[in-house]
Length: 121
Image 1: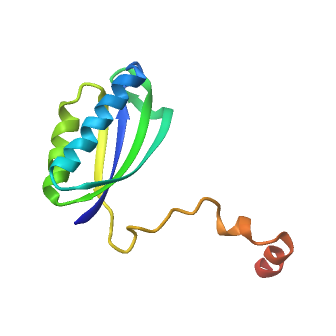
Image 2: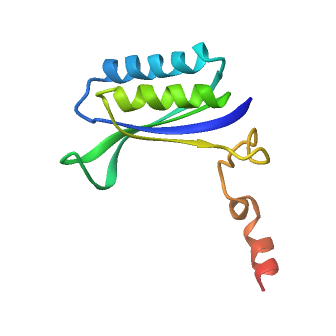
């Protein structure tokens, strides 16, 4: 089983229920192909870096899953065919990075102000 992460950019004009339905179907594609789903992080509406399909915004969702390459291939096929999806990207997460939690705050924020000044100088 390999760890994967996918970012999906949905059309912002699509209803929230349609986004949820497509996301549920995508996760079901992973499960039916022997994979297991992980965290699903909804970023919401964000401004795009460049215009896509004459739109300046998109609804971002990042989902993690583990599975065999077949699960990734089938998910890719499903997302290409989904009308609600503007763009998507599936990446294989390196083994040494997989399973590590992303830090919520930087290490600098955890160091007291006096200690940061002494270590910098």
